[in-house]
Length: 457
Image (cartoon, rainbow, N blue to C red; front, side):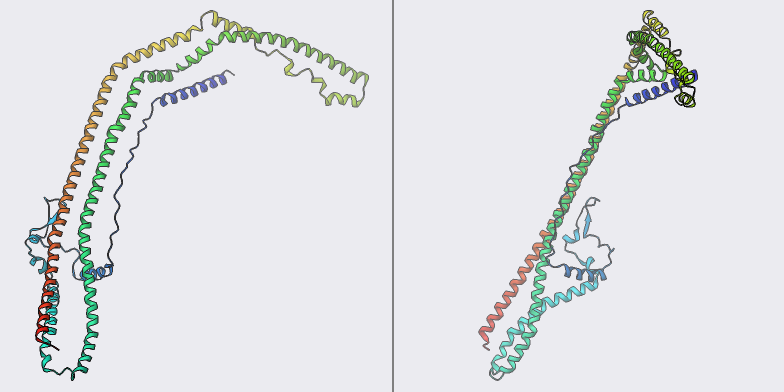
């Protein structure tokens, strides 16, 4: 009996200790960091129009890839790096209009380009000169005699001229559209470089804000929690002491002793009710015994038959007054409890838990006086660490801003290269086209004038 009570008491104390330990651990508040929310929006990639030249580009790309090596480097002097960086610009050979080194690597391409230039330039002159000077022989030919053969030749030449004209028109359209694509590509390349530079700068700035949020804001949240924990460390140390030593039971004992006056009144009421219960129960038990005696006398003496005897056994009449609830011998002695409670109240035993609690509070003050001088140096170190991390965040942001400046400078160099390339070769191409057009119109006008003046067919 005593061992079981001891085990129950030990188990209860262990459970209470675990609960208080968990409560003490919960006092260490976990830091809840705010999450950095990025509002970075990249620019959208525009849709570029190919003006219907995709199939021609694929065909020409296939021809060039079959002849050019994909990993072949360009000769030096045409494209150069700016200050050994990833930015590129047009080289000095381009400005000097020196293309021998570039063309020398591809002799076949050079021959093919010369052949095309010869055909493009010479054939129109031959055609114009032939058709203009042929009218000089019209004087020696009789037009009515040659009308049939002339008509047949005209029809045949017209049929041959139709696909040639269509090819020329197709070539003009292709040349015009490709020239338009070149202009768009130069403009779009500059815009793409500017757009990518803007996205890169936005990304770097977002990284800077993220680092600053991590090193400044999140560490500030950590600093706030640690500071509050340092000021509450005396309370937590007292709770750990009470937990490890089992002193938390003093509070329970104090609550029990504070309720002793009320418990004394209740025990006195219990004593009165117990006396009344014993009195009423004894009368009830005596009444049952009298009734049992009379029933047994009637069923055995007056009615000595088997059915009457069976009534006694079936209804268990012999043991009707032996129930444990009718015997009050094992009731506790309430007088002893009342005497113990009175001793606790009148002999000042109830003051002992209060004295012990007061001593615990004194120990808490000792903890506080011992720990208070240590808190300011810790707070100063935390503040120094916060300032250091803030300075580091600004240093990282300065490096990031330097990278952003480099990106802007490289963007300016790259876009300037495209603009210079377009200004030099775009205008030259336009001037060359206008010059060739004026020469063709001048030749047509001169030879047409000569034909009208000297030959009448």
